[in-house]
Length: 338
Image (tube, rainbow, N blue to C red; front, side, top):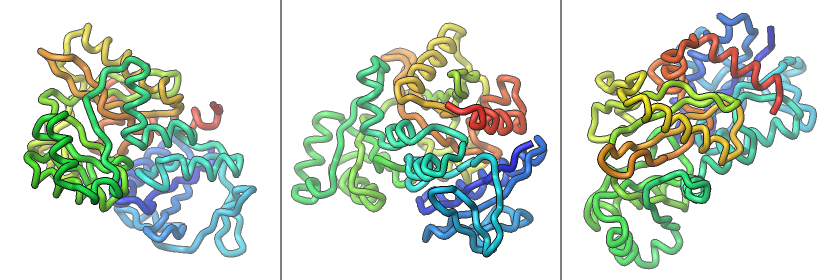
């Protein structure tokens, strides 16, 4: 079997989610017979060979370094050889094409989407433009840039609400796991939500509020799609706490949809994956207005959460694949090449 370099942690606000995901993947790859080298990247960007006995994983241990352009992993004078990389990194500096570019330079195979699809999917504004061009229905949105917003915050928000209505969702353009996202109603609340989102970057996406079901589809290279799942959030909406901390949130697989709707949303997910030139894996998220516009794509996550309660593995398990089989399949897809 393969020697897998499992990268986790990272510099983004999704650091903790990545550390939790990595534990499950480490165990699953070991179960599948792979030798796994767990490497944590701390918030300063330093690399560490970690102690796999500590759960959840921490980005600390023996210092490591990746040498370019040959991609050698060095721990002191030791060269730790590896065959393939599993970068379970979420958000900027990991899921946005930067780390993918590192391993392209090194000529090392890695799990997941390449540089272009990773970068496209990470920017919620650019991704929506691509989906719109591809004829995949999406919600209405507007972009707010920090430099322009600060010149006239109130005027900007009044214009946004005139076009999008109220309430709205305010999101950092390049984060996931609901970090920095707010549902806001009224001028003052929306200004506060934009200020919060700007803490994570100078580009913010403001979207219309959609009263609909939250349906997700897992995709593997091919593309192949799993049976869709549905989010049942413990909170008013599926925020960070509802995803990772509130045990009363639930993810149902398969989603209770008519057979025709199941086929429709799976086909839309495959089209979205193809539209961004996806490979390896992705989770495609939709809103479903049952008595309105039908399925509206929300976003594509090119490295979705892999925790024990995450939707991506649950959908494949509901379609007949074990967690270990799924992780092994991803490694095999990476080794087979684009």
